[in-house]
Length: 170
Image (cartoon, rainbow, N blue to C red; front, side):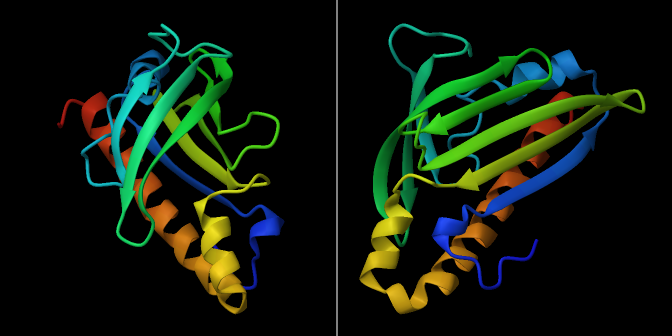
């Protein structure tokens, strides 16, 4: 990915993908299990469904508790905005109309398995990154670049975990 010269207002995106030797319904079950990733090496520490929800569905909400060396700890509320089993699961962070970030898993049957794509877009709403940029506006491009690299690594690690679980290697 190339993020040189990117600003937060540009709503930069990251996309990573992998092929998994498992059928889409198996991969779907793992990709939509929001409790799967906490504690697996990323900044996400805990997740829980809100408002009595137990499975992903349009309009369902979940809270994510995060921790990062530079940003501290924080909790966000995400809103499921796309949910079409076993093809797409997407959520918007904070406000579905003006999200601080949008995330999506897309699944496609391919070569007897599943191609799984993990995508995210920053903004357009404010986020913790907005605060960091306000403190050092002359560093905005560097701040965005570093954060996008972190997110890309974390998203790749997420796909690695899902792949290992789906293929029975974890």
